[in-house]
Image (tube, rainbow, N blue to C red):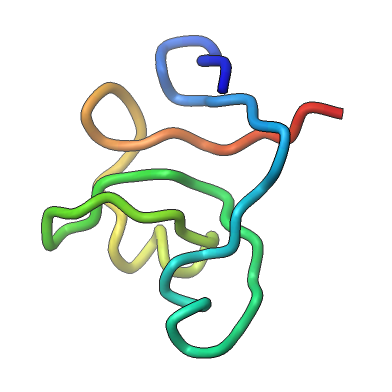
Length: 68
């Protein structure tokens, strides 16, 4: 992983599945790696980041960007 500007982005070779969607049997790609409002960190799609995410930045979360 390579960090982007202001620790709000991280460049990855593989986009993992959203932790919440995966637990529900879906394979939705994650858009974020971030802290949830209940404490633990998770990979989250847009929808779940809006529901459970705590924001972007150091100690909060990063947007995942795939390296082409």
